[in-house]
Structures are given as structure tokens and as C-alpha cells.
Image 1: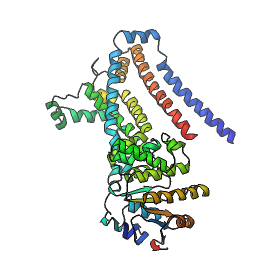
Image 2 (image 1 turned 135 degrees about the horizontal axis):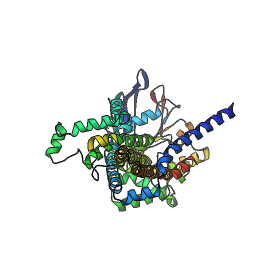
Image 3 (image 1 turned 120 degrees about the horizontal axis):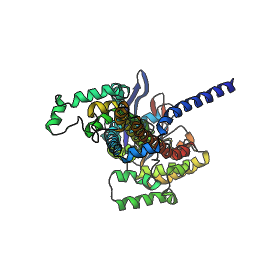
Image 4 (image 1 turned 90 degrees about the horizontal axis):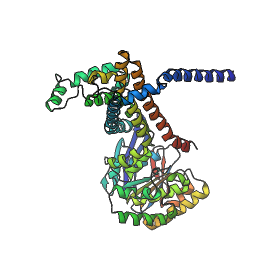
Length: 214
Length: 264
């Protein structure tokens, strides 16, 4: 479970987020919908610990995580531009989090192979990100996020730069991935169709406030 | 108008290239007999050895100590950052003789630090260690600037992604930041080494000129030229110019494929 408790964010006199409060239940796929520039990415950054709120609290699994640094939060993020490590292969990108946690090499290999199968990119295990298409990069980013064993996965408009056909196929893949792994997800988008296809619950961010939309 | 501007630009480029080539030509054109004699009579090789040894030590020291500093300057915001950046850049603008005098006052046995070092048996004045210190002081800003630029060029989402994959800051530094700044580390090292190799003023102040011990190539050029031995000074200048030329060429060749790949 992840919750925002009266989160506010100000930049000087400008209030971008105002008393934002909502709770996302464990294992659900929730959507944060809103127009470009309304503060969706900022809210995700606050949940991830990349930005500090001006006031309010971030609760994860009931614990106050507001001042906890990102690497110690049980949260991961899939970025709009995937943010894959360009010097690492697909295998190494997916294994990164497990290696950072010093897991056993055998366990890392079998987990990465399992995830490569899930995203259907086994034949690209030794490829660097610069030879992958945009869609393939995002699939690797999904797998890399799942390999981190985070309780919550945040998605920052990951399909934004893809064409409609690819977007539809990745939405279907993401639904299947969620069905298989049942992770808790908060997905940010401005696309209502994408939101309806993916989400159990949709929240709308507008004018700095969040309202449950369906 | 456009044609006249183009002609002006090409003309100025050619003029400057001619000026640089014409000036350096005097250094690169050395009689093989003079060069051969300088290299075989045992007067130049020890100087070359001291120069290579000390400049490489200074560049390695800059790499070891300067990389974390460049990382902090590139990735963190803190009060006094601008003042710190100016301070670290100061040796570039400072006349080398001033830097040398400052170092001399710092490490002389009469100074507190110099006294402690002397007590511990570490002598810096008129030693190779003193040369390394002087070269390091003057060349460090070149290394920090290059590495800082390389780290700043990494998109913020990359270290953020690493943190959100539960990597500690140290793990991210060694496994993400350093590999992605490799070009900056190499070019910073080469520029720092080239600057250290050519360092004269501060080195002469701290280490003097003891033949075979603290005589570096720039110091040798100065002492030999002022003693009227222009042939020997020319041979030393030729060695220094060739080393600098090789360093710059290696740097350009090393980065050409990468640059071409990025542009493609």
C-alpha cells in the first residue's frame, strides 16, 4: 500500500500540488490522469523520494517514508525515456538491482532469464540499449523494475513517445505482466484510453488537487 | 556578402594555422645529430625520465583525488559551491611563480605543515615529491573541469534510476557514473598530464634544478637556453613538443569513433 497524506509542493509562491491525499491498495494498478504540466511527474518524484514535499507525508506499507532516500524506499520507477544504462547489456540492466543488493549469482541469472522470457527478449540478452527499438527499451525497463522486488512500481508515461500500434501491444503486455506478478502500480498518463485499458482505479490530478475519477 | 565572410574566415584560419606551425616549426626541426647526441650523452634521458615519472604521478594523484571532487561539484548543490569552484579553478589563473611561492611557504620546514612533514621524514623541497606536488597543484583544475563536465552530461534520470533500483550512492558511482564518464576521465587525465609535463614556474620554485634529480624538461630548456646552449635546449624542447603532440593526437584518435557514432 502507498499513500499520500496532504502532500503540498510549492516553488516560491507557486503551488503545484495542494493537499494531495489518496491511497493505492496493494496489488492494484492505479492511474494518475492529468494534462501535461499539471504536476503528475512531480508527484511521482515525491513518492519515489527524488523530490521532497513542502509539507505532507508519504506512507508506504503504513510507514512514514517522507524523509527516506530513494534507494531505501520499496519503490521503483519506469521513466518516460526508459533511462536504461547505456553501457550495460540488456541482461546487465535487468540484473543491476540484484547485483547492487549482492544477491547470489545463480539466483540473478535464473531471475533475469525468467524476466527475459516474460518480455520475449531472450535473443537480445547481450545487446546494448542503443540497438533496441523504443518499444524494446521500455520492455527491458519493465523487466528491470520488476527485478528490483520493489513493493510499488511507478510508471511515468512510459509509452508516451511510442506509436499507437506499439502502445496498444505494450499496454496488453503490461496488463499480462501485472496479472503474472501482481505488483502495486501507479501509472501516470494524460491518455484516457490508455488509462481505461490499464487501470483498476483512476485518479485525476487537476489544479494541484487529486480527485478519484473512477 | 556571405562569400566575403567565408573568405575572411578561411583566411584567418589559414593565417593562425601558419602562425602556430611557423612558431612550433622551430621546435620540431632539430638537427638529428644534435638530438642524437643529447639522447646518447646521458644529459637528456634522466631529465626525460624525471619529467615522465613526476607528471604521471601528478596526473594519477589528480585522478584519485579529483574524481570524487568533480562528482560532488557536478551532482550536489550546497552553500559556498561557487566559492569552492572558484578556489579550485584559481591555480589556472594564478601565475605559476605565485603558486610555486605559495607551495614553498606551505611546505618549508619553518611552516607548520612543512615542520610536521619534516618531522615525519618527508621532504618536499628540492625533491621529486616536490615536483609532483607543484605539478598536481597547477594541473588539478584541468582534470576536475573535464570530469565535472562529463558527469554533468549524464542525464539526471540515469542516477535516479540507479537509486530507485536500490543501488547505494557508492555502487552507483562505481558502476554507473564512472563508466559513463569514461571519456571525461581519459581526456581529463591526458590534459592534466600534458599540463603537468609542461609545468615550469611552480616546479622551479619548489624543487629547483638539481641535474638528474629535480631537473624536468621545461626547467632544462630554461637553464640550457639561459646558459647559451641553444642546441641542447632545442633537443629538450623537441622531446617536450613531441610528447605533447602525441598526447593530443592519442586523445583525438581515441574519441573520434565515439564522436562519429554519436553523430550518426
